[in-house]
Image 1: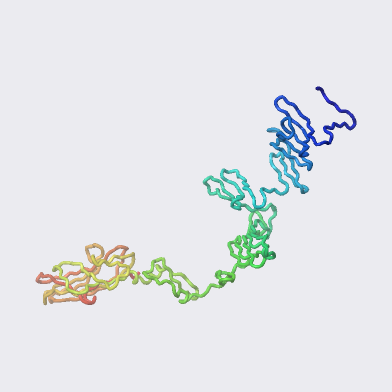
Image 2: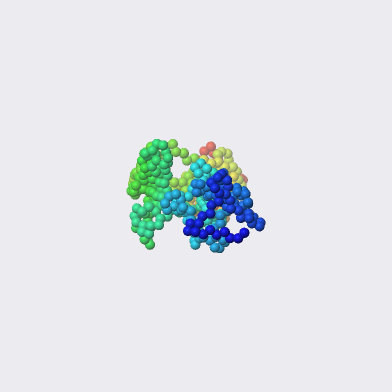
Length: 456
């Protein structure tokens, strides 16, 4: 078979005679047959594999000018491509594979899925783990930060503007909240809330003053309710920042907050408050009025003027007489207390331990008895600091030529102590017959006692 040539001004080759039958051009290949045919039963023009019309179609064109491709479509070859442009039904809308830019250009609406049957859409970032995804199953947009362990590995949303000349009242970024399909209409479908960043000056190399403003609606389109300014002011329902000394107060349920002058302070302000159940700590605070101005006072400051209430103690011997060796200094064993603020007196060692550095005053006394008339030669009462050899305070009675049976001594003195210094009371009686004297206790601490407190 040779070449078929049809000449003429309007050459025409007709296959078939308008009867109900397939019209086929068959390419009989060595390893594979191809056909171009009219499938009369479907009224489709087919290009396919094989020698029989309808077997393994590749391209089908129907009477409505619709084309079906049964396999992959390749335009160009690797490293040598071509533009592919698909037009939409609206003028100017198209999808373009731009061969020179190696990218896709979408002009018009891009839809993934259909209403009530969506699909995930995921856009990856340039760092491992970073992506933005519309999660169809959760009906939410997720912005995921990078997986690298860094402070910047977080999801980020940037609202920006392309304006090159920012002036006061220009909106830099905006987030709106709306229910546009609400059946109630009118107010219901307006923007119900909004957050906006609004410039407050003409931007320059030295200024980017911007307020962050929060809008909410009640029975209208969202209106400004609170703003945080570039100067750290808080505005209520507009540029209303109050005045110096005012506080933000609540008007109760259904009423707006407002800037108001601070309320006065009196005893009724603390009625029902929890009572203090222990000695105040240095960091506890009191409130007082200084010529009408409320001021805070730490307890440590008050304590410097009245240490009695945190350091005072009074120890005594309740009853009975206590004997001790003649002409020997003995510690007075006072095992009873009238008070001991701070628990600084030890009823087992009979010592007082200073809780802090300062000036202390001590008052002490004892009733001493030689036991026999005219046997007492001398009696001394003293206070000893720590384990020093000499007493810091001492009072005494020396009989000289007139001996005594009993004597009562009391003394008072001040001393500088450091924290943890100790003080104790000691007694000394000398009898002429060398027998044991004694000191007296009583039902009240009138006979023998030891007391003190910090005064500065």
